[in-house]
Structure formats: C-alpha cells, structure tokens
Length: 454
Image (cartoon, rainbow, N blue to C red; front, top):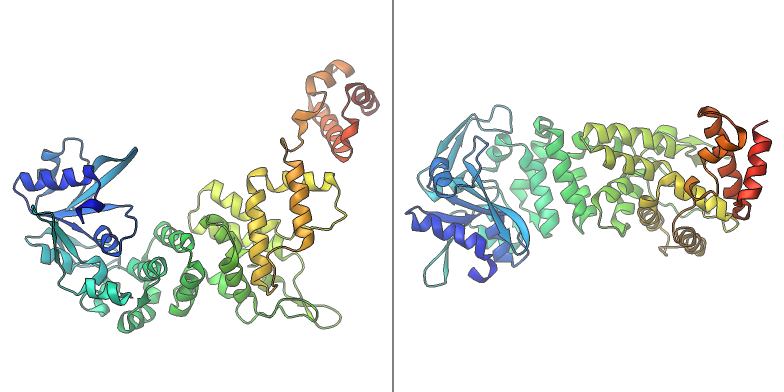
C-alpha cells in the first residue's frame, strides 16, 4: 500500500507520527487506494489540532472553521496540497449544509461517524513493518467489494445534515460505476428538495464532475429518477413527452430523451461541451408547433435555446468563458453541411463560432446524430464539411489581418482622418474578398477603396 503513496505525502504522515500524534489516511484517498485507481486528493486526519499542525509545518495554511490545514507538497513535478484535518464531531445543521457546531474529536471512530458514505468512512494506518491496518466501523471495504454507495449510520439523517450529499451520492456512483443501496436511494428521493439549500456553485461543481465521467448519461438519468433534476435543471425536464417524431425523420423519442442520448454519444471528454450537448435542444419545448400537415416543428429552437442556456449558466455561476462557449455551441448547432456550401460559407461558419469551438461543435453534431437514432456518427456530407473546414483552418482562417491593405492604407488613399468610414470600408472590402480570395491584391483593393470612398 505504501507504494501507492507519493514520498512527499508519506513525509507529512511520518512527521506527524514522529511528533507523537495519531494520523490516518482517510476518505477518498483510502477508497481509491483500495480500488487501485488514481488519487487526486490526499486527505489525512489526526488528533493534532490546527495549531499543532501549523506549528509542525511552517508553510501550512489554515483559513477555515473545520480543522483542515493545507500543506504544500510536490508530487513528481506538480505542486499539490495535502489536507490534514483534526478529528472532529459536528452538531446542528440548520441550513442543511454546514454544521452549527464543530468540536475537535478524541478518536478516529468519532471522526468517521460524521462522514457521508461507508466507502468514505475508512481510515488507513501505515505500520513500521510496511503493512497497513484499516479502521472500518461501517463496513466500507465490504461495500467497495459489493460496489454500492451506502450512507453512514442513519440515512434518514445524513442528507438532512448536508444536502450536498444528495448529489454527491449520484456523482460518486457515476464515477465509480457503483449502485446506490436501496434505503440510501429511497432517502435521496425523499429528501431531493433539500438540494435547494445548496449553493449553485457547489451544484455546478458536482454536475461537472458527473459530466466529466464516461458514465455521464447514467448520472443524468439518476438525477432525473431521484427528483434532483427538478431543482437543478428544471428546464431540461420540459422536454419530457415533447415528441419529435416525424415521418421520414430519424427522431424516435421525446426532446428530453434525445438531449440525454446526445450527451451519451458525444465523443468529447470536455464537461463544458458535454453540458452544451445535453442542453442543445432545450429550446424545443418553448417553440413546439404544428405544420400544415399536423406534424411537430421547432422553428428557431436554437435561438431560444441559446437564451435559455445563458440564463442557466448565469444561475449555475459558470465563468464568462464557459458561458460563451455553451451559448455559442447551442446557438449555431443547426449549421448546414450542404455539399454545395462555398469556401466563403465555410469561413463564415468558422468566424461565427470561433476557431476554438470548431472541434467541439463537430463533437456536438456527432452526439446529436447518434442521440437522434442514426446509425452512423458522421454522414458523408458532414465528413466533406469537416474536410472543407480543415482546409480553411490551414494555416489559419482568413481574417481582416490577411487583407493586403489596412485602415492606415485606406486613410492615405482617401486622404481622410480616422473615423467610422474607415471601418465601414474595411468591412465591405473584407466581405468581398472573403467571397473571392483572388481579389486580395493591393492594386485591385486600392481601386475598390476609391470607388467606395466616393
């Protein structure tokens, strides 16, 4: 087991022991060691107080009320942090999220009793003889082997203490491909409305971790079946029972199912792109109508969907950059891949969505196709379109910077000062040259500037 622990983390552990304190590895780090999967965060718990810990580790930082001291460490070439938390017990959770009272505990058993799930309530001690012992009062190791998520102690209390545990249970089950134990699941369903007490930032973080998983579709369906999705993404549920079926079209499901299946088949690993894929048709229920033959149509659903997605991103506190990507992908996901599309049209597509979004848009389209019931990820038209896009991206998309004249040239040619007229002419010239790159010659452009400047 010691072979799985980085030397810098072992140094923290051993120094605490050397100073006479009890210390254990605990939580997700123990769980992942037992499962033999990568460990991102190293958590230790000890009977040393924060004051004791910061006295031992002079570069440690303590800026919370929960007894956790961060200790900077180097793991390989990467900077990291070992989190060392004092044994503690907690009392009172009036806001369904944070304990009213935090008390330093005296034993590891006290500390484990306050934890969320049995598989996270295992402590590990490294012995001098290079073997380890587990403190596992709730049968977490057994539940790991059974691949189940089970609440510590009374499930009826665990989610009322901290409502974030509702979505954490689903996130961990999704990441590990575990099932949620029956009684624990029933309490999640019963207490789903308590998630409203959790900050949107925390909800977003858990949601993105679900979306980062290869089993993201399963996670979203668990959120739906538990009732949590009603409070996290109610707009997505508006697509339930909104049929997309039309004769001769591949859609065979309702809008919600299509969105969820599009996520399932989207090939990206980027959770932001996955989120956009999950939301890409979220505008359809708002614009659903019937054509003259009585079949469902969704005119401009991408425009409406982009506006809905923008509000959702703001509610969930996505960054400006993340919001812009999500909104752009949804707004323009109905792009045409007509085989007759000109090179100029392809360049307009690239400028409209942005170079950095091109690959992500293609991944969304693949998810959209497969999530709609088609058997192939890419049609021949999409393959041809991707080839054309690739050609226009080499060496870089055509832009105003590539014109043979610029704003200064226009001012010299027309003998005018800086002003809106310069920008207007530059844009007109660019649009003309973009349609026919052979016009990008200084002599021809000078003549055109004179014509436009009259």
